[in-house]
Image (cartoon, rainbow, N blue to C red; front, side):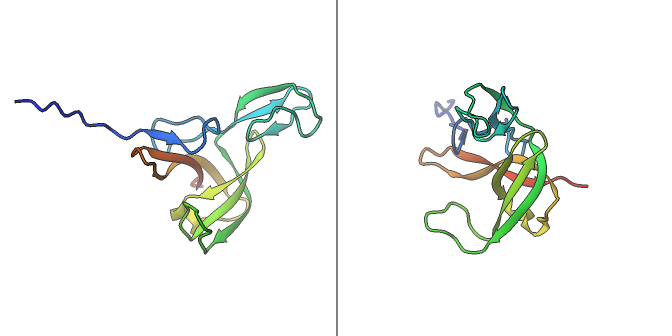
Length: 146
């Protein structure tokens, strides 16, 4: 007799909707979603209604490259209250190849290699499971092998 039990596979859900294009699998590139001002060309992440550079409301939605360079970083060795991140981890500021500078974390297994000027790719990474068993995903920096 065949079983009527259907296995429910957990699905990936973003930590925050609208921040990046959700890839099909973990560790795949995560393209950030933002805006570019049609008036002055300034880029923003996360998306904005008005340009912080020229105050224009002429914003257009863009998908930024998932690659960039580390401007600066710090290693965190203590866990802030209610944080899902377990130390040690690196907070990195990444200047995207075709967009703004964004702040994220470096994948835990890569923090020993963090350095200013390092080329990185933003990739989807598992943060935790939610109460429904879904895999909560955000983007983290991963070194690009040279």
